[in-house]
Length: 105
Image 1: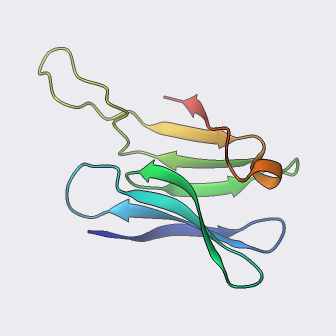
Image 2: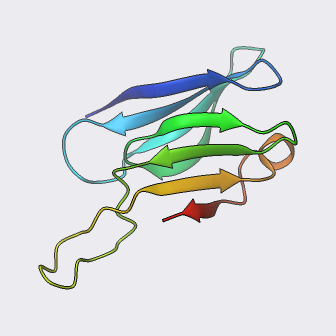
């Protein structure tokens, strides 16, 4: 049901990848990091389709989830509405993405 979708190498040389859900609308995937010792960490859960991973020179990280629904409902149809969310993790290098901020919804 899920697969890796997009990946980048961070400023410390670690590979960071975001997954995507191929069937269904549930945010079942995550953002993962392969560390220098080849251990794999799950950094952020609740990803539907992670894209456009990028890092700032100040230790932050961004990624987009264009299929993320965030529980939003379209008022006309009462269906889950998709909001193109860009997530910002300003303290990625220091706190391993504990603080997630929606940058754009």
